[in-house]
Amino acid sequence: MDLLDGRLKFRHLTLLVAIVDRGSVVKAAEMLNLTQPAATRTLRELEKIANVPLFVRVPRGMRPTVYGEAFVEHARAVVAEVRRAGEHLTGLRQGQDGTVTVGTLLAGANVLLPRAVARLKQERPRLTVVVREGTPDVLHPALLAGELDVIIGRLGPAPGERDGLHQQKLYREPIRLAVRSGHPLSDADGLTLAETLAFPWILPVEQTALRQELSTLFADRGLPLPADRVECTSILTMRALLLQTDMVALLPELVLRGDEHLTALPVDLPSVGRTVGTTEAVHRTRTPALQALLHHLRQEAALLRETLREATVR
Image (cartoon, rainbow, N blue to C red; front, side):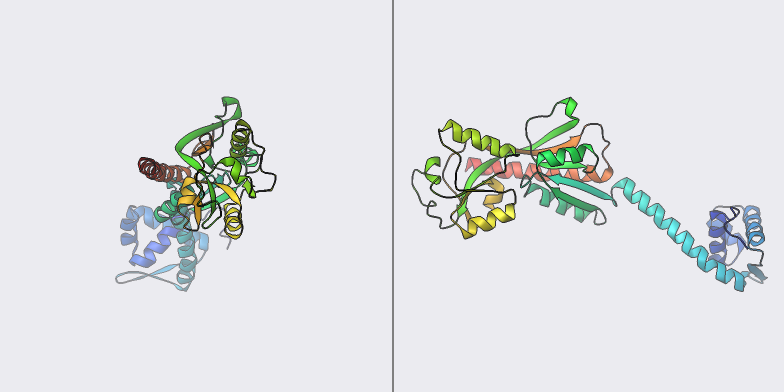
């Protein structure tokens, strides 16, 4: 027999399973919301396709033949797989399954993003989150090419319509000068930016907006950029260098506050800060998975805004 010639339909398989489970055509028809004549006709079609008897009549209904028992094992597997496929598609449509791919701007959302992803995974454990770190010159083309769903982190100058990007601000966060606890400068009174140049620095790479702001600040104060420096974008590497050396680095307020082994130097950096937010491609429709992530990002950002506001009041 050839079951792949196009005559076998899904309704044949569901009826076969229903008859075996319910023991009669009448009960199977009720289960599938069919009339009894329609169910009987479908069974005859199936037995004609199979070219073997699938059931025999017994006093209280129908019993599968050896052919019926063999066929129903495969029918159950097919019906189950189709049901799972439906559940998978529903999950994708509702954002329960699938993947959301996030670009993060090199230490741009070290507090916000982990909190939002943790909330998202509690709500939708089957959803996969992929996080890719990079600089704007790498992430923006990837976003426009569809390789990323959203970029989260420090916002630069607002893009124009021609750029095809849209930014959404979430919160503003101060940037601090950070050193290890016990650093020679940590107890200095009246410390100035110039005095920190006696120690090696960790600078942001040139492709970042933070580096541009820092360069402007040094120029405004008549200072050269630190000659003894490391240029780094990795928070983990920066932290390790700070703990093992007397280096000085720029760290976001929230990152620094959560680390008991690091401390902020009392040097005012009024023109250096960061606005954290999201960047999306203008003409791309948000998936349910992305919408769910954005929801949690907004919620966590509101909590961080309150935390920063309370710190400012104190």
